[in-house]
Length: 216
Image (cartoon, rainbow, N blue to C red):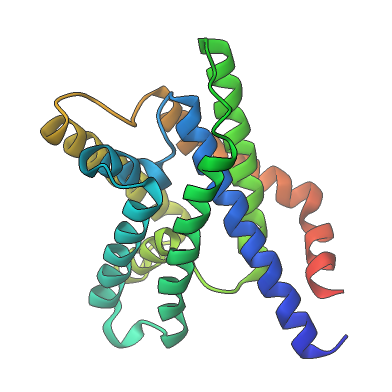
């Protein structure tokens, strides 16, 4: 297969992965049991400002990219400026996916849990595709990579602390500006703990298929 065709195919799959991750994030919002760490700050910010979650997600992405540049300086790869484009696309996907699943309104706790678990599975599959395509980091992951490089620690060891910092920031913002706890509940904790293991399960059973889909 032509190299340019392969590259185009890789980018298409990457865009699909962004939409799937955004869909998973939107499902976590609809579950109303606390959003995933990736989206909790944008979600709380949307409640504070009355802007869409996609809009606040874009602003949050720009902040994360700026922090990366400050931390890495010359070590910030030029291709990582594409995170601005990726952050924009991801933000549009969030608002679009929220519109698509507007009909999902779980009425009881059991159905809320079901939707939450669906969000974790969907997001995990999107992350698998994103990682396999190796195009460019989404801003949230790029921020964690920058922290890990600065501290000279492994990504996997730094990520839980970054996730906790996102959640704590969301808690502080919601209490100060809303007067109540929003966007952070048991679902936030559950998402933080199970998405990673689900990604590993998907990688074990579907990783080779995804590799073949990208390369063939």
